[in-house]
Image (cartoon, rainbow, N blue to C red; front, side, top):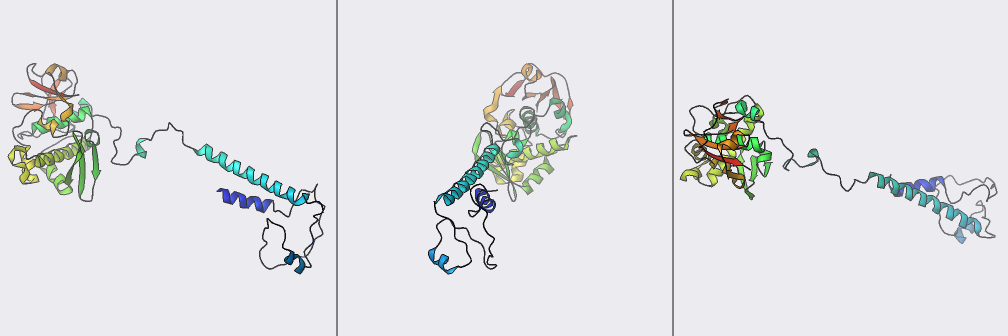
Length: 303
């Protein structure tokens, strides 16, 4: 209820013409007109109206105290109503240190997310045997182990009418737009398989974004021709850390060692012409675990 309604209710309960029994003798009951609304007057009565009305009783104004008492009583009631309203508003105020929860944030805002565990990453999604996109696969797995899904890996992910707009950590002012058709094309050509559908969807999404960045950077000198050409460049020989860089994690990549990765630090390494992640202290190979990594292998971690 707003303050206006409270004041009107106060008038209805305490009209100016009524007064406490102790200060006003009972008035004779007079006949009242039945037509027209009854109005409230805050000033002295109009002399003309008094003269023209023979049925309206004359107010006793010998000492002038009665109207003043009525007005003071009315004002007290109004002040009480206002104080009640303000007290109710104070109770509804949000504490100054209140923090928004995840559900209060917009969909494209960064939300708390959990990284994928090494156990989940082993066969949640994996590379197809015979393909050569191990650099991108290893980069995606390491990013998932360090950060989580796309909303945690990238600076922002926002859906558009025909696809998505993605901003990356190393270039937050640059937008990578990928259409729905390109997302489907990348998923159809990634060759990914896995037992965790959510992780598989996340991996295919990140594969498409990696291809879009490859296209915009003209990877291998041919990727700028088309999105399909960019996807093709991901399935070739590449440098060990390129997969991480195309995810926008350039500023998080640091040289490491096989021992550090074997001890649980997320990252990628190269051994025997293959790039992979190290999960639970062992080499991840096409959805299964192999032996311990070679101590002299090239390795990069995500800090």
